[in-house]
Amino acid sequence: MINAAVVGACGRMGSLIIENITCSPEMQLVAAFDIGNVGKDAGEFAHVGNLGIQISDVKDLETVLQKTEADVLIDFTVAGATVVNAPIAAGCGVNLIIGTTGLTQEQRTVIDGAIQKNRVSAVIAPNFSVGVNVFFKIVREAAKYLADYDIEIIEAHHNQKKDAPSGTALRAADVISEALGGKEYVYGREGIAPRGKEIGIHAVRGGDITGDHTVLFVGNSERIEVRHMAHSRQIFAKGAVRAAEWVCGQNPGIYNMDDVLGL
Figure 1 (spheres, rainbow, N blue to C red):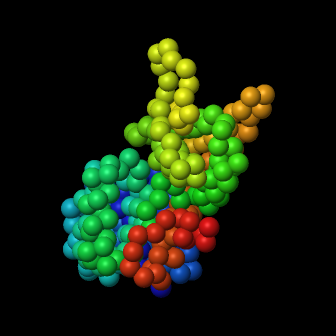
Figure 2: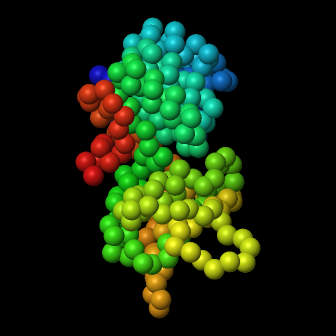
Figure 3: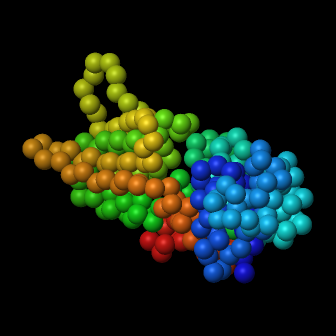
């Protein structure tokens, strides 16, 4: 049985992840962390009844991870928190699932260094949805055949999302750019200038949109649109738990969802 811990346990993603852990025959929740609601039962926020696991203060992360003998920590919080939490967990020998987006290159360097130094395993991905990762594979293949088309990426999320463009949109751009041997990115468009051969990335924020991503390949007289629409955050939570089950059986290293799904 895999011992799982969740940071950000009272948030929308954290509570869904806990709900999915309770449905896993291979995993059990042993610790839950947040900056508030300390002492309350984690099951209350996941709507799964009393689990007998109290919310711990994230300041006690190291102590609780060691005491509970956690095998994996799942973190879908914010960049400023993840860059602190991940090295602590790695230092405890705990594997990592990181779905936090908006990480800077400097923050990734800190996190990656801690994972490598402590020889733990981690899956780091901007999106844990199975469908989105198949979407990445589709746009990668399409780009190879449509290299001379204009390429635009449009993403839409709820009005509380803090980072823009989304990590998923950036990953889609990276996948396309890699397939084409390198492309510059333009974020939004303004001014008076003709379009070049760059990839355009556009962010929309409004209401309660879970997550929509569209890649347009536009040629003269035709266009192809590849689109993924998330109807529920459950797809991300299920993917995260699937990755957590997988990562605990891997050699030390940093993996992505392509590895988890065999893509």
